[in-house]
Length: 157
Image 1 (tube, helix red, strand yellow):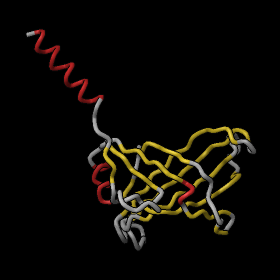
Image 2 (image 1 turned 90 degrees about the vertical axis):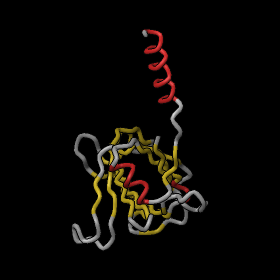
Image 3 (image 1 turned 135 degrees about the vertical axis):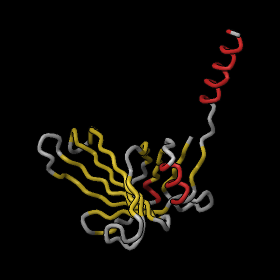
Image 4 (image 1 turned 180 degrees about the vertical axis):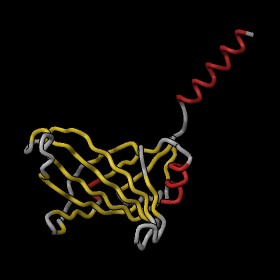
């Protein structure tokens, strides 16, 4: 009996280690995964995004890739808060060292709309005073598994 229990535990542990990563290719799939409590990660290829900073659209965005796990989130159906389109919202803040500003709080807010459009707002703040130092807004779309121009990928395990 003990060998069977140990065998079963080993099989279950190994199954968790080799769980397949699955790309979510629509806002609907993303929302279902989050509502089920599944772990979801976002990966952004900023160079493929449209960048707005200081009220202007930049010609290019930085060639950078970032990722984050989605923890807390909210979904607002169309009209729930006076919004025309339904959207998922989530955010994260991290203390980072910036080459110009030194230590900053990097606050990232993401909105994923029902039509698969994605808006990412990035802001830097001074850690002690929370004085804003920089704000940029990136926009793209959720990668549908086919379109190479989309910059935002979502994965679940």
